[in-house]
Length: 114
Image 1 (spheres, one colour):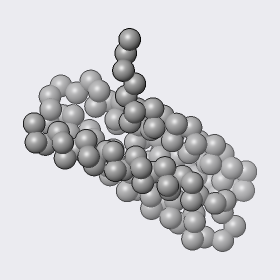
Image 2 (cartoon, rainbow, N blue to C red):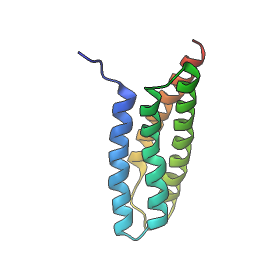
Image 3 (cartoon, helix red, strand yellow):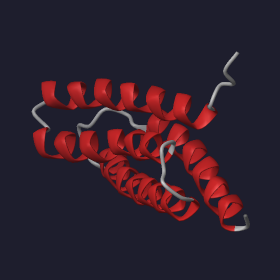
Image 4 (tube, rainbow, N blue to C red):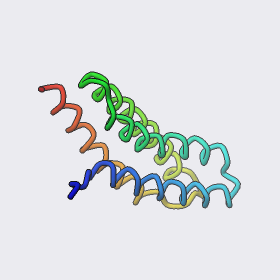
């Protein structure tokens, strides 16, 4: 029986929530922010999934660092949404992203000590 990889699960679920949120933004004609958020928000999980097939520990860490950068960018877009008028509430997404960020940063720091 294969053990669940929690970060893969969390980032896949987050990507699905980002897709739904961006669809809501597009219904409100917020196309530019939606496009940016969709790219960065779904890229987090894509990079983490790529890291699962890393060629070396350094490659693994590098891919997780890219995911960390995408987390920062996604947080920026979500913060803009939260602070802008007439945007749907993004607080729940931000909360989930904070949790993902903590796990990603822990994986990076733990991997560096190996």
